[in-house]
Length: 512
Image (tube, helix red, strand yellow):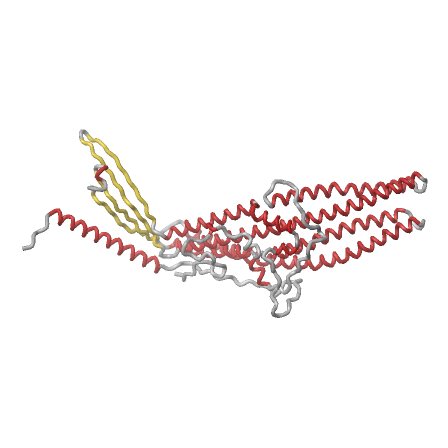
């Protein structure tokens, strides 16, 4: 005959069976909830890149290279190295490392990467804990109450609201990264252009000082002639006035140079100070203009990619707004222990648990949900118009830069011929004056024209280099990416594709 189990043993077995059954219910409910969440639809339109009218070629672009040779765009990892100036290379590197605007943009990428994690966490169960304790006395009876519980809650994303918000957050992160690259592109362009302007001003100062020195010698010669009675006081005053005119231009140029150095110092994150030069405006290496540029290159510009990702985000939020019409389903539960004595809370306390499902849906919201959907639709239309406008502006920038390069080259050629002609004219006018065939006014007029032409030639050469910088900026600056890598902590959450591009902007769920 089999012995009967002791009562305590039976009670323990019943409690164990009850716990197992409860655990089974939890597992079954969680599995069912997961299946419901995964089978839920995603409301709203999936993103499709809009069709944009893109010209086949850029206006004023050079002819395409022979077949089989690719365009020469960005042949160097850092295109500005083509100028052959080590000081410029160092200045750009310093700016990329220390510029405050770029540091702000990088920190914003980190912020939006954290927002992606925060948004993504809404789709996961939220687990917490809690504890409470207290004692009270009623008459001669003192009683205590202590509890310790673990709680969990989970909103089932049946209509894809959280998935759409997660898609929008990822698109905003990518837009912020493109904004960072745009800041880097603008920064490099500003440093290179500012450096060219500095060399331009240096050359103007050099011309002005050479002119001033020539006129100083004229003053000395005319003073000797005046003392000898060979020239009049009027001619002496004319020579002296021209000397002072040249002298008055030098302080303005020196001020402009100092201010340009201060502007470059700010760009590279320094306090105001001098900027080292490695080359002169005349010794800069010519960087060839890319030939046969396909028009699709411009669509890689950071501002275009940023605008598209903002459109992706706005499109995703339309689906999130549509989900507001439907109920939210959430599961909550807790389990723990309760006891009248603190030291018996985990040893002899009573076990307690609770599990509940909740469904909440709108019946009447006074038009708030309709308004939220109308706002989301309007924001998407705004983002679409901005995207199309950004692309058109990009093509205009490229065409403007190509036109400036083409026509500035003609201006430089013409001014070089004019300067050469005026230098010869100054020699001839001086010979005519020395031989008595003309007065000195003819010499002064020719010298003034030469001085103005030399300054204009220097400005035109500077404009040519600045137009080249503008062209590379207009083409999108894909050479910036290797120079300013994305911070290691700014990637997408684990288990996601951090390299998703505009052709795959995020969630591609089917509409519900």
